[in-house]
Image: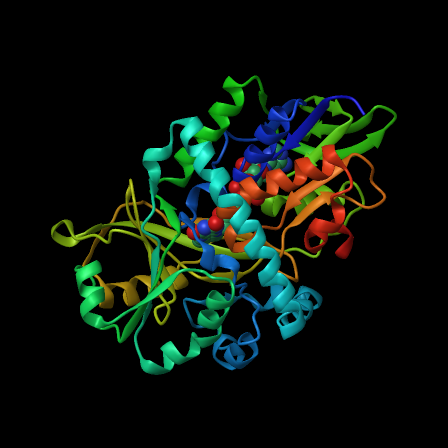
Length: 415
Ligand SMILES: Cc1cc2nc3c(=O)[nH]c(=O)nc-3n(C[C@H](O)[C@H](O)[C@H](O)COP(=O)(O)OP(=O)(O)OC[C@H]3O[C@@H](n4cnc5c(N)ncnc54)[C@H](O)[C@@H]3O)c2cc1C
């Protein structure tokens, strides 16, 4: 194999993969239709947490279904025609909530998160973005005793995987986050975890580091990929040129599904869309770290731009129009808990969490497609897990023999 590799997609996953492969001696061209980090990796809640090992499809999901299917919560919405077209995906997603698969998934995600955190710290230092990081963890808020009881599986899982946590009484919560209204019955502080106050700046800093270390970045919208004698060719959309290399990494996040169709691969990927909006705090009120109101269904994260309120899941087509109802309801719930001021953005931001039926990313070479590598499907935790993904991808690509260690992420489980 030659030394040239194209990495398609300059979100957090593609940028981390490109940098890692460059540092492992390859000549890397990173390609995106926009500047790095302008899509999903920009608008997330900025949480880098050990607790993110809990997938959305855990064994407690079945019990929550009657409530979630009413289609009126901040936690979960869906558009009927999309769900009807994707019943196969939804069935597999639900079946993968069974305890045996759940146990495998949390173990795999825990390993990936543990691998990623120290790498993020190194990259933040090397890229000059360390000032974006807080090491104060995040806080889960429970409005009632029954909500607290419903979180028992998560707490048991955290304990099993030694995720450091501390229960907070209402008085302790008031001391930690005085701006919150006294409506919470209990709280759980996830410790030993991080958050950032500007995810886009972090991706941009990592991408600059990639360029400073000799990587090439090219703006190009990919319209398709094909394999030929020399390797993999990326065709620009509307005849905007092409690029060829022996190896190609597809890290297009939610847009990976469409592009891979051009190589004959039909990924079972769905889009857990989510919205955010920034707010001021009345009289300068703020929180000092992200808080997750489990009853309200939103996360409130202090960001450089203001207080970022982000919603749960909306299942719909990747590029279907945005709808406002879920964010409006999240705002109503958040105003019960916090003195939110005015909206700071003209329109809500819409992002798409790319999710495979077992809530694990796909990391490795596509079966029967030599030279085509995949780093995609990072659902709710791609910001946290991109550096670990890059390490695994590089190990599989360059060291060989490691595949059995990363079995949980093998592309062959769905291709
Ligand atoms: C509301 C919300 C909150 C979240 N909160 C968190 C959180 O707190 N912590 C966490 O870890 N994760 C969080 N996530 C998930 C996380 O943001 C994603 O998993 C992660 O950003 C995915 O990164 P990516 O690089 O795979 O995709 P993206 O960031 O979407 O990157 C894909 C790139 O591909 C490019 N592209 C697409 N099509 C083409 C094409 N045809 N040609 C060229 N380029 C193309 C795009 O321009 C983009 O730059 C959240 C997500 C949402 C929606």
